[in-house]
Image (cartoon, rainbow, N blue to C red; front, side):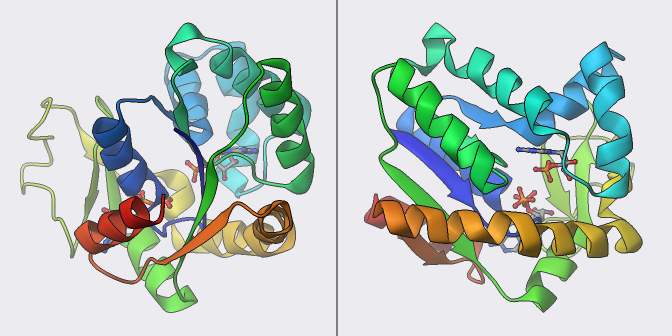
Length: 212
Ligand code: ADP
Ligand code: AMP
């Protein structure tokens, strides 16, 4: 199964991608996670992405598209993948089409997880992430332990710099201007599936499974 997850920052793409990846037995590919891992290792890629990420802007396409191409060419993607956070604009969607064509495959569905702005802002500002394993928590909906250590790996749980309110506003603006047109793009292709992302995470998962 080859899926793209679409939706505003904080809507729950990563949460659903982790579950779908387990359920379908295909890798979860998050470009945001790839950039954060590169930054933690202080590689040239990570350091070049940092200023864009911290200010809520998109990392330039020449960097991002090459990164995704290399990842999709990895043999572990031969049975499928869940793309989370890519494509982020129409040029990336066109590039993805070419990459998949060169691999002789195509997308099965683009799943659009939809939710209103108030819900998205609440989810994104309450998000906390484990530095070690990337597990995601939420101060209200799935609170981390009081000692701030991840129950899964013992890593430190922190708030992403770009999840603070001023950067969140910029990210939502970028989403509206550049990423929302990707939803229309996949509608035009005829593979868009929309789910209500305002429900509980288990219900969102069930809705996605029943659609794909
Ligand atoms: P995205 O990958 O779209 O940016 P995440 O999956 O990281 O979003 O989710 C953002 C925050 O919202 C996280 O703290 C997560 O635990 C929480 N969350 C995700 N889905 C739901 C849901 N259906 N209901 C309540 N909280 C959710
Ligand atoms: P995310 O983890 O998906 O919220 O992404 C965090 C940040 O990483 C974004 O605000 C961008 O700066 C960068 N990023 C992630 N995916 C992409 C992408 N497909 N294109 C450009 N920048 C990206």
